[in-house]
Image (cartoon, rainbow, N blue to C red; front, side):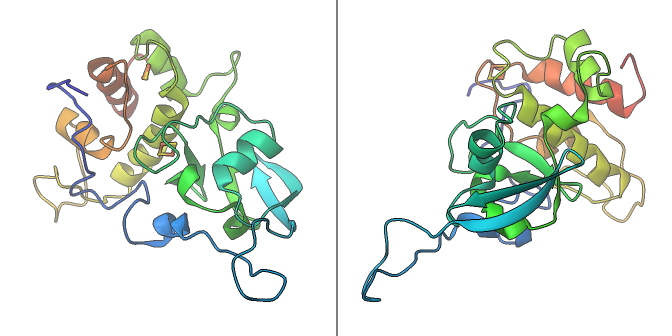
Amino acid sequence: MSDPDAGPAGPRSGAADPQGTGPGPTGSGSAVPHGTGPNGTGPSRTGRPTAIRLNVNERVRQLDVDPRTSLLDALREHLRLSGTKKGCDHGQCGACTVLVNGRRVNSCLTLAVMHEDDDIVTIEGLGDPDHLHPLQRAFVENDAFQCGYCTPGQICSAVGMLAEVAAGWPSHATADVASPRIAPTDAEIRERMSGNICRCAAYPNIVAAIRDTARGGPA
Ligand code: FES
Ligand code: FES
């Protein structure tokens, strides 16, 4: 990506790892468990289906999944919620971002079985065409997408990010980390959204949409 204005900035430096790719509870799902073979001598190639219950977009959903199923695949392939996108499937692009218990998470990096009874919100749960979430409206009004592939992840991430700002969580871009109030400056937005890649490089408009929403602007 080559947008010097608001580019994705490579590794998620500084911020409190809200995307869950580093150490910490939200990024701990990358270790895929393996069952043992019939003789207990090696990994099996299939997992025994496991019944799980997820609260997705305020609906209780029961499903049987291979325990190695990522939350992303459970949402897309089992629940047919295709708004959440698979970009890299490796925690590097942010396209799969959803909210789990109010925090943004890369759903490709965590296993569905780890989220029994968790509250999960996907882009479908934020709003619909007749009742857009303020961030959805701001993205439309600011022309903050081109192909739109990254957009559901961008919006879910922005929802989580603004909650982090409101809660006073500092980032690498925060000038005064002791201040209980953090201004949603462009630098803060760019830093905190650096885990969400946009291959169309709509970064300036994405920042504008989030800035408008944070400041109670046009959205
Ligand atoms: S698909 Fe999950 S981070 Fe890229
Ligand atoms: S709008 Fe195309 S990848 Fe972001």
